Length: 349
Image (tube, rainbow, N blue to C red):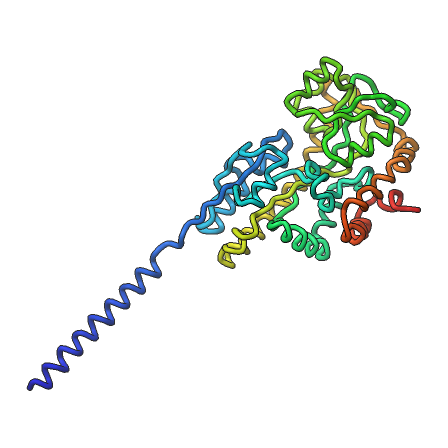
């Protein structure tokens, strides 16, 4: 009798234990995955492809949606100056960031392939950054700095010279004070005869009005959006910066700590945005072309002979880039040359 009671109690206890473990398992399965919130540092800009990273548009929403709300970006505009975002991401003061690569060409020259008269269009550059060999180089070189580059967000070209006079020939550059953005166009324009200056964006209009500078080198879309037609009479097209790249970067330690499925979602979403924004950059250039026509600006298109002479003059910029880019520079340039329309002229001996 006692034996039957013992086994009855044991069976009841086993049943209760089994049910409890089942309930605990069900609760664990039902519990939502932990939400990861990252600080996303970015900066404003009037160009269409920079709208991608304004507080809370497509990229951020897609990432949150595709991760089921597990990965959320808290976008911070102007949290850091435009040329310090990359350093903040390296240091972990921001988890993810977006920054123009040419602004950092003095610090990370290998990453800046915005060479003068080199790329004929944005799609050549897109094919280059998608080359598997280039992807491996990016993975290695960004990784060495504690970064993961998840996308390249580029503008078609900074081919506009906004000024109060036409610049149709190389001779017209002589003595002209031009505000530039980045090492490569600065070197190129000096070789073309201009006097280059670096002026903060906020001071550009006043500098033009006072005559501190005679011209601004930038993209036609940015120039129109910033209001340069109000203080300039002409825009002359010289591709001294044949593309204007931008990096979407993640702190490597933070990326490595993500679950594999979230890493995959982040990489795929970023790559999708890369393709969309490069196409948007091309659309922006078409829109800017229309904008120039309806503005009071007079568009100046140099003869091909003048462009060819400029290419000859600025070829030392390639040598300077190779000198600064380090041991992988030749390999990167060789890959780029397979896609860039201007490479045959710029690299001939």
